[in-house]
Amino acid sequence: MQKLKKHWGIHSNFQLIIIFIVFAITGSSSVYVAKPFLDVIGLDQDNFPDTWWSPIVYWTLRILLIFPFYQVLLVAYGWLFGQFKFFWTFEKKMLKRMGFGFLFKG
Image (cartoon, rainbow, N blue to C red; front, side):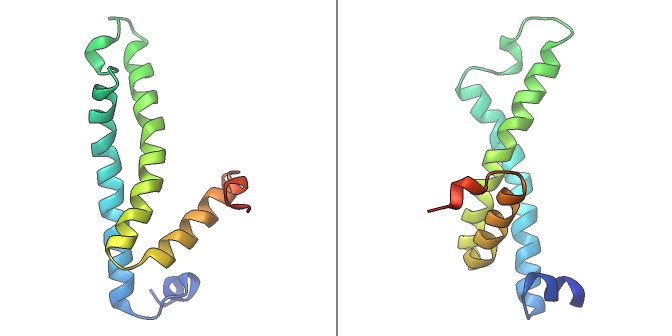
């Protein structure tokens, strides 16, 4: 745990626990939110034709939707739990590594 705290630049075990809680809530929430969102835009499983590729398309869309929901929820939950600075820095670093660094150049 000391190595992780040093790597992330945090000092207390309490802050580390809060960060773990935010990661857990964000992961669960982003998966939970993706399905109703697909339903709202009319792309639920019942709307696809009954073919072998329908589940593949549906789940691909759902997984692709989870990613942006995760990004937004991570920062939002981080803010709610008083860890906005940590998660904003984490978010920028993660997106830069994925090739989205152009979003943060000003």
